[in-house]
Image (cartoon, rainbow, N blue to C red; front, side, top):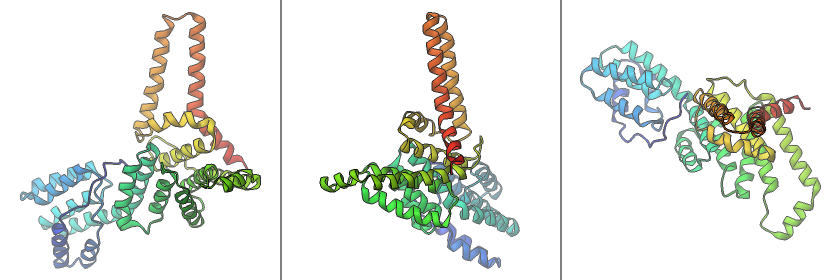
Amino acid sequence: MQFGRPKGEMTANREFDELAAEFEAQGFHREAELLRRFPRTAWDDELVKGMFVASVSIRDTLRAEKVAQQLVRFAPENPFAYLALCLVKLKQGQTHEAAKAFDRALHFASTFPTYRAQKIHWLCLQGKLDEARQVLRDTMKEYADRWEVQRARAHVLVSSERQAASEVKQAIELLERLARIHPNDPITHALLAQAVCRDEGRGTGDEEKEGRRVANSEWRMAKREQAMRHLRLMAKNLPTLNFTDVDAFIAWEVANQTLAECFRWLKPNWLLERFLVRWLPPRYFVAVGILWGTVAVLLAIAKLFLPPTLFASLVAIASLAFVYNRFAAPVLVWLLAKGT
């Protein structure tokens, strides 16, 4: 999975209507009906849109098919890639192949809300909240009923720079409903823990009420226990992290963000992680390797010029930084998962 740049809605729907009419004429009534309800806001990359328009506009069907096949190779998870191939095959009179391509388009259209929701999480992790809100607005137009989209909406609310108490409360209520429906979803529990931690640290806007709230140790303990409960559920349900699974990567990064929110000693680690998370796997892991490889090279150069004592100190600091950066959060997740 690769995230592209969010773009606006498709402005011309004539191609869809014509395709639906041709399907109807060929006897593909189900496909024609589905096409009329096909999501029109699924663009996620300008190149995908441009290649789609090219493939459906080229009069030379052989050349158009070549462009459509290139689009499928370029964007194998985008429904519009297969929709372009479908239209080209229909122009060639290959209705059976057109129907097969359309089935693939429908398959990816059904998973597209999950794709868009993961992209919103990814943008929130980088602190690109304006961009995340734009993608969320576009996605909510057609997929507001999908739980993954509502979970992404909660992430935007929790990450709000305004830190309004009403938004955090709204996020908690939303996430609690999602947790009842999907009790084993690690991102839901991670965001709940994060929201609860933020709610504990927010003021009420009234000094007298704030004093009573802070003094209420029972209230504070209840909040902390609630956050720890969701942290443990998050840790127990996190998927196995590998070099290619973007979904698992996003879940782990949301968990890392939450741990930094709940444990102050992990905040410096998250500052670096927030920079690295701009790359998705496998590029993320390449970036991490380059970072620490560069540190090793700099240490090797420093050995030529620094006194042995100072060089040994630098090696010790770099080693501790590496252990802290790469192992602190995973070890904490393991301890939380083992907790009762």
